[in-house]
Image (cartoon, rainbow, N blue to C red; front, side, top):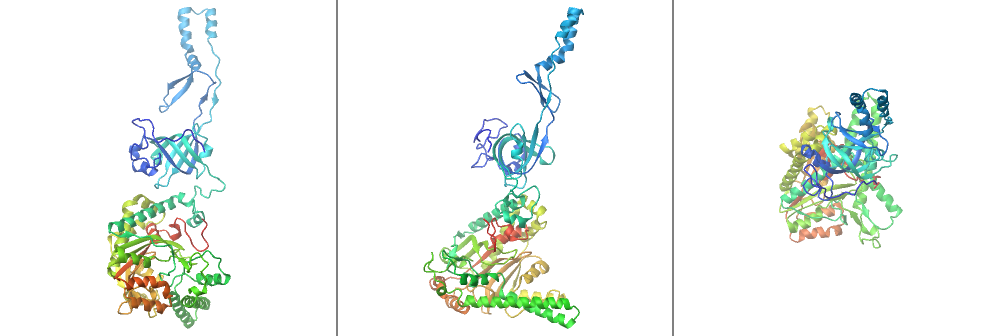
Amino acid sequence: MEAAAAPTTTTTTKDNHYTPGENALSHAYSNRVQLRVVWERPESMLGKRVIVGGWVKSAKEVQKPSAALHPPHSDVAVISGEDGGRSKDVSCVEILQSRIPLIRSILDVFGGSGHGHRKKHDSLSLPQTKVLPAVASTAHLLLTDGSCVPSLQVVVDSTVTILSRIMPTGTCLLVEGQLEQAEGKHGIELKAERVLHIGTVDIDKYPLSKKRIPLDMLRDYSHFRPRTTTVATVMRIRSALSFATHTFFNKHAFIDVQVPTTTTTDSEGFSNMFRVTTLDQKPEEKEKLDTIYEIEGVNLQHVKAAAKEKSNLVEQLKRTESNMEALAAAIQDLRKTNELASQLEAREKRKLGTSLKDEKVDSSKDFFPLQTYLTVSGRLHLESYACALGNVYSFGPRFLAGKTDSAKQAAEMWMVEVEMAFSQLQDSMNCANDFFKYLCKWILENCSEDMKFVSKRIDSTSTNRLQQIVSGSAEIMTYSEAKDVLRKMSQAEDKKFEINFESGSVLTSDHLSYLTDIIYKKPIMIYNYPKNAKPFYVRQNDDGTVAAFDLVVPKLGTMISGSQNEERVNKISSRIVELGLPQEKYEWYLDIRRNGTVENSGFTLRFDLMVQFATGLSNVRDVIPFPRSYGKANN
């Protein structure tokens, strides 16, 4: 660390002097000015003396023109030159030498031109000073502090500090100087007068450089990647969406409730959860859980539908007999799909049978006396508060123990969950739609500079996509209607998009993508799903469907899932028995229905997917500050 002087909170008052603490430009809890403030009002900041801090993105050293070095202790005078207003240091001896011809002329007029006088003239000749070349340079640094997209050029003279210490990429600097007009593309730059802090880097080990590093490689350095422009921009957008979330619900009189991170209840009824324990796990139990987690991330109904499609493809290839190599590959693919379906069926039997029963695991010596897991969803807990406070929401992390490598799924993801008392399915759908539009509009109005960078460097369609959400409306249809649309399109397009539905089968991600990206080219809201496709607590309709909905958006799929919840205690109890869930774990939830029940509805917005949708990034792990997925939890 190098310090020319301790940083101060106030400075002498001058017309062109920036005084931290005396105006709104300085940060409330620091004597530095954020670069965001500088770039928001560059003209008014010119001539101000400020302190800025940040990290070096790139640097170059520029040699200054050579200057004369003079003997020590020589008298020095300053005269004006014509080199752009800069001054030169000239010794008194050099001034006399430059005037010797004039002195000689005066002596010749008044003293004659005799030999003696000439000797006197010669005696005025003074020894020449030895001129040595000076080695001087300046460092031109691009500094970023994470507050905005643009960097600030900082010019540091070699007389201020040792340039080799401040130039490596990643070096942290706190500098004081004056903001001046810059030549070229930078517009404004800081002429450093003092370096108040230097945080050096280990050049051989520091992973970032001037060159762009692929995002998937940056995930291995999650503690350094926010220093890149892309990740910093995404994090500012994420922060804005977080603030917008609380603003929306505060505006509509919702109460923020924090649900527990640990629970004994499987809120969905069919989730793979992280078990929380302080005991060493038995080898056989670990093997069982590993088998379950290995095939997580794939729904049994999806796999069965895929197997049926692959079976039809095999039959078609057998009939044509034109491509035996393709037939062999299709048969192999079908075999693997059927094996996966068998594994999933076995998993479901374990989960409905003995795998989740307390008596199979002795938890009496554990920290919690009952089996405890990380929360998958907080909607059941929110219901208890909705039944007392009316409209409530929660915003926090949820966990799913799956070994999926999906670009839309991580082990830890943040969710916005909402519950509203005295409301039905349509109320929940309206609220979800309004909330989604509000978030899109907030980004357009409050993150314009960041979205310009996103459009330029990540996804050129991102801004237009958000604008279409704000100005348009979602296509609303029932689950049955969505299937009919897909069937018609399949027939009209000569089965280019093969549709094979079984009774009660769920729509796959391919089906949803086809609806949003190809047919409607905008979000769709699908409601009234088959009973087996949704959690146990969803209200059952008279036609055998359940009162649930999904808001599906282009490129990503399901953004919001919601439902009207079952208020009839006998219906919920029957569903719990039907699924083979341990009823004793849901007694507290059934108590809500037994005592002062109310019609209520709610939804869940996948917050990380919302950030991914806004920025256009291809993998959700790149919008999560510290992503957790199978095999990845480095810090």
